[in-house]
Length: 173
Image (cartoon, rainbow, N blue to C red; front, side, top):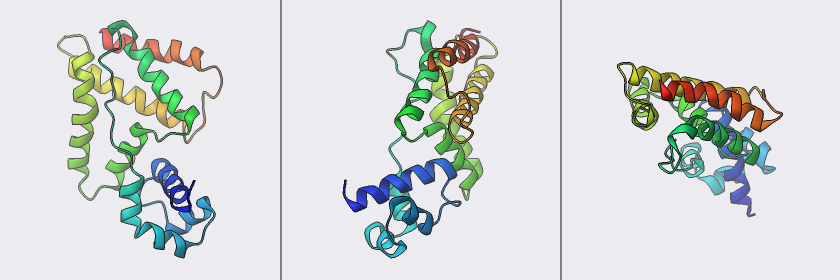
């Protein structure tokens, strides 16, 4: 791994956990084991580091998942990203709203990327949109619980079974 790769990995972890405004070049330098000057030399600027360290968005859902396993698979993906040390998009997008100069636009972007896509997989009913929002809220809560709070750090299958059942109940209506 090159020095720049170490810097980007540290920036990615820190930005994903704390958001853009709560991360400094000094913190990135300390996390990657280099000087702040070297971070700036190899990264360009904090804005450029953020852009380079932010992975492309993925869809929160796979069309291959069976309808009766959507809840479990959504939960499993969050736990897998935690175990792999990968960026958690639910938290990253939450922090993007908090850090945004235009929170209303950031919320609309979140809704389009998550809630609208979830709505498609939630079974029809008068409250379909609300149930999709509840699914998003449950997944945001889980992502926060297992990442910054380090809760539920035990039997992943137990979590998938129980938390996934709550999500699935909303999906099924």
